[in-house]
Image 1: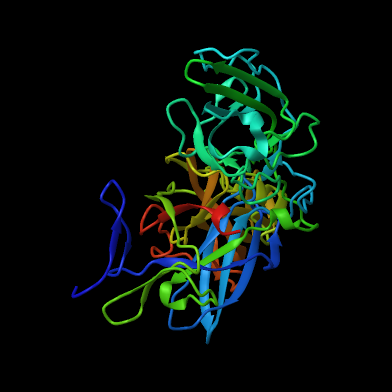
Image 2: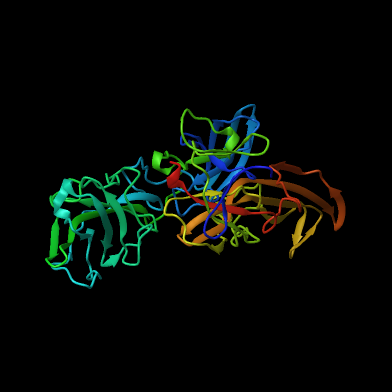
Length: 492
């Protein structure tokens, strides 16, 4: 390149370069149309999202997974002019419990704020900084000529440390003692610690910790706003104070609610149960009114990076492979050969997908987002046959003397599946299946005979819904199944 900019991290990995286009957050869509197709065969729900993006650019859609017991996948992306449509499919019909953010349902990944905690704070300053078992508190620490109790007259750095259940919380950017040092001007804590705000004391597992004053209600805006505990030592020789303030603490983070999300034929989805579609596009699509920031251009004068919109940060890229079959119970036992008569309950139970592969990944963010456009697909079917003989003549010990007819009934039941991904836990993705189509067809033929001589077959009847059965659609385990993992917290 004749000119440009390259920024790398300590691992010599590119962060920003005028030679490549960064993807930036374009829009987050939270109000899709919802279609529950069926609660049979494992259930399926389609979420359809629409948004506007200049047709010159290609969107890259990520999605959140509100339930941890359901598979999700992008089924289709289409465009009409500058209007784009994304279809997201998920296993399961309506959830058993509706959650609009105030009623966590089983099987869901929800943001939970803990109860107020405070115990085990030190009663004297010692060289041992290890917390005691079962301790809970947030600690402000300073060594210098001015103690923390100086309050609004304090102008120096403060060491912030969080203790949860007797362990030092691994804060982002902490030193070996678990402390993060921040500048406190006029005694003001330089971070917004308000519960429900986007900021707080963040650990490397992305829990957020909030300090509370001694009354357990108010949150401190200054370093010495009614702490729950305070210690101070003074060395007259050096004129140095060692001071420590302790605050009560609450923790907020995403947790999995145990149990199954449900698969109800009727009902509704709450706002907290609808996947969010987080769309990214390259830097040329960024619009904004900000008058400051940084914009990086390629040689041709078009944008490569634009900090007016958050850039896409991918935590991990991995490939996933699916089992050969979606289910290992689709035997046809108990299904009728006559007129594809089911029963549907038996068919549904057998055809519900139950096979998956476990994929181990690095520890995921507590509120992950995924890009997975399904290419894996699988067709499975079973056939049932029944033969009945009808004798018009004389039955002599099982032999028909005279004319007889032989009726042959045959019914074929089939299901079609698409590959999906499920967030099983923080380090495991499951690659399984979502049932997207189903049907059955049947035939009846009649064969006649007279004293053992065939009189020929009648035409019979054939009706029903035929499967998409071919070698091309059975693509389990093939194709490029790429999964991208990011942190949705940055974009919602």
